[in-house]
Image (cartoon, rainbow, N blue to C red; front, side, top):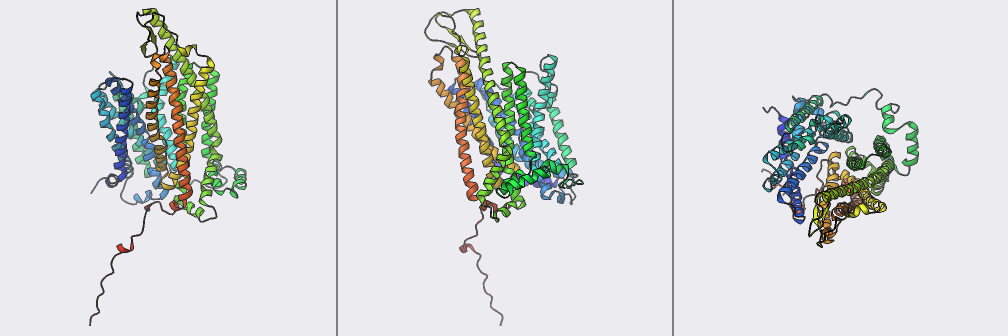
Amino acid sequence: MNCLPIVDRELRVAARKRSTFWLRVAAAATGVVIASGGLILGKVYGISATHMGSVLFHLLSWLCLAAGLSAGLFFTSDCLSEEKREGTLGLLFLADLRGYDVALGKLLATSLRSFYALLAVLPIMAITLFMGGVTIEQYGKCCCALVNALFVSLAAGMAVSALSRDSQKALTATFFVMLLMALGGPVADAIVANARHRPFQPLWSTSSPGYVLLAASAWGRSLFWSALGVTQLMGWTMLALACALVSHTWQERKRAGASTAGSWTYAWRYGGPRRRRRLRQKLLERRPVAWLTCRERWQSRGLWALAVLAVGGFVAVLVASPPQEAWIFWNYVGGLFTLLLYVWAASQACRFFVEARRSGLLELLLVSPVSGSQIVRGQWQGLLRMFGLPVALLLGVHVAAATLSQLGFLRVAAQASAVTTSILTNQSGTIAGSTTVVSTTVIIPAKGGTNTAPATPSLQMAATPGRVAIALSAAVAAALSTGANLLALCWFGLWMGVTSRSANLATLKTLVFVQVIPWFVIAFGTSMVVGVLMAGLSFRASPGQPVAFLVWWPLLSAVLGAAVAVAKDAGFIIWSRNKLRSSLRAQAAYGLGQPRFATPPPASAAAPAPPAIAAPR
């Protein structure tokens, strides 16, 4: 008798799925494209093979880390809670099964695809060993760190799923758990180091899977094995917690008064009687689908809390008058807020149609006088009503903070270039036959053969309005791209909610098709175009080339990338709207477990009639 029957069955089923094969192929193809693009860029800019190998190794490893940490969000955060909602988890415990049978079976079934995808990328990373700049020890430690991050993420998703029933709440909780595990330790060590005025010493950082990868790629001695042991202990603890809880949390235990209209939980979710009556009077007669979307208000309150937190932090930093480097750091914090906003937008847009199909609400709406176009329009109006204002507030803060961040970057680059040029002039003076202009990283001889002093960088002599215009242009381009991405995520998420089986799968497909794949294509294309454009404009012939390169490269990349991103988002929005309006009724006719394209066999393929048997005489 098999000691783990659920594990054996789930592994056999997962190994036969076509998605397991195609995800592995897609991961390998993505790694090949990224490595090829890096090699092409290195050849264009004349980067040595050793340096390019190190850059490619770190690029691929950190991208794999991001994919591994996000695996728990989409593969395990809803695996147990989905069984609870459908009522099938309790049936498993009618047999002679234990909690670890179910939890380990779900873990292996959901992790097989992501593990195979990681294995497909590791041989591509090994190519950098032949290029130089990477040792075999670093490569081996990096592989261990990536597998460790994948395991910790999947275990965290299992623990959250064992405690949850709602897919969106499970996804949000897993996101914050992984964010806390990845950044909580390093941030705590940085705060302690700043408060005690001492260098950064990793103590709490050993609990971060990101620090494990950082220690794996470091030269010399590091805390790699200690950090690996700590994160493994955390991962196995969360997995043991999921095994212990799954057999006790599958039953739906209702608290006294929890679902009544007068309870505080009902009021938190739907509002008080006055708010519900006012919303019905305003929306139910004219826009019933928008009323259905706007009934729950806890999502809107969560986004308002995020917007207030961002505005409060921006005002606090602005009043404190920090150095320019603080605004550069704020840009990275804004990136985390933007990532959270993208995940939220995709999840919220998919949720309504997935739940409406599962509960049969979509079929009831389609047999009512409400048309398919009205359903789509009402869902979109409900999303705008609930989340339009806080999103606009977040975009405004994003523009202001990005402008100040770009200004800080320009000033720091100009000051660093001026200081470096002054130091070199005092040490070596002028060089016969050439004039040397120095930036932070590049030393380029100017043409002409004169014995004049180094020229002052052009950015340092530029007027303040010019800097503001450059910074504002880059910030506005980034804000337009972010807004267009949110609209595309919402519209495409609506269509994925109609065609997907679960909310997490719909969210994953929305993020991958709208953001992840286009981001790789746009980043590679803009890097090539901007590089060729700057080389064609002969920046090397300009005395202020190094600083001009630092200014124009991010500006041109931001503007060109924003233009391409807006065009891409417009295509996704138009395509999704047309599909929703033309195919909503046809997609709603298919059940969640039925094949999407089922046609009856032709008449010629019908089974022949049995031969007639004569009656006995």
